[in-house]
Structure formats: C-alpha cells, structure tokens
Figure 1 (cartoon, one colour):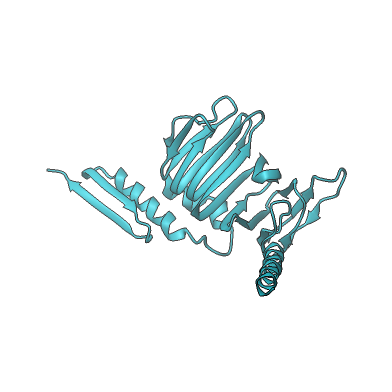
Figure 2: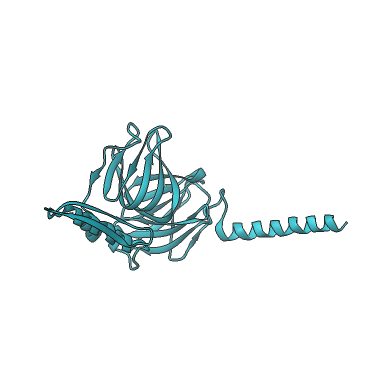
Length: 254
C-alpha cells in the first residue's frame, strides 16, 4: 500500500513539474519560448494559422504564445530583437528593417525578405526552408543571414558553423561569406568579408541600445583578421579561445 501511494505521489509531482515547465517555456506545439527584448518602429506579428487574421503589434518584453505558423515583420527604419529558447538553449535573433521571418512547424524557419543576425553561445541546430529545398545550420557563434532573389547569404562573424543539407555540407570560419540556393544547398566557395568594416557599419550590430553578449568575441575576431592582413609577418597564427581571449603567435620576417 505504501509503495502504491509513493508511485501516485511521484506521478502527481511529475505532472505538476510538466505543467510548470510548459507554462514557463512553452511546448513544441506552442511558441511560449519567444520573448521580445527590443522593438523599434513598426514591428508586428502576423498569424498564419488562421486565414485573414490581422497582424498584431509587438512590444518590449512581450511573451509570444502564438500558434505556429506565424511571422515577425518590420517596416522601413524598424528593428526587432527577440530571445528564442529552443530545447533549453538561448539564442538572440535580430531583424533588420523591412524583414519578414516565418516560424513554421517542427522548428523550421523561412526568411521571406530582409536580414537577420543570430547569436548563441551553445551548439544549436537551425532549419531554413528555401523555395524547393531546405538547409541545416549547426554550430555556435554570431552570424548573419540575408534573403536574396536566388537564395540566401550567410556570413559567420565569429564562432563555428557547419552548413548545408543531409548530403552536402561545409564548415565556415570567422569572416566567411557563402550564398546558398535550392540548386546549391552546400553553398558557394567561401569568400572573406572585411570584419572591422562590417562590425563598424552594420545596423544589426549598432542600431540596438545594448551590445551583444558576444561583442568581445566579435572584436577579437576582427582583430585577428586585421592582423592577418598585415604584411610585416610571414605568418600569423591566432584564434579566440573559449574564454573570449585573443591568442596570437607571429613569425616575423627574417
């Protein structure tokens, strides 16, 4: 009898814990895991599960409990930042002006237009739909995504990413830019962008009142790239450690 009482008690406590967890973080069927952390200008949420449903304005600290699918949108000169809790891991997503990001079922996303910045210090997996294909992004760090007519552009600012689909993938390093499309989900051969220039001019980084938590790593990645460009060294080896410190080893000219 005592054993049966204990089993019932454990089941009851388990149900209470599950209810509290769902109310705090949402579930896979609901989107209680998104919170608006910054909203400038005209930012809105467009429900897509109900036909002809009007858009709703979003405001600071608003918890999003909309049923998927739905989309966030921004108008000209508007910016939006959300905190996204996915499988116990936190990511910051910033949307530039005139952008539209759809949150679909099963954690799939679709960037209809505009540009995003994503930042997360834990390894995370992202799924993005293209016109007739999908891409998978795995890794950690700070990276940008922009919608193009023929696909999407991805720039890794700092960290490490693996990008592609289930059959073809490639790894990116800081400063790499690739273009992905339905015909080429692995992406083009990476080209390097000027990180110091990008960090100094991008409104996805500078138009928000609070700095990203990865700001020191972004600065270090830009420093490493700038030093690598200097010709006074035959070789320069460097990286940013997990403790966010800059480590450099140089081989001077003879």
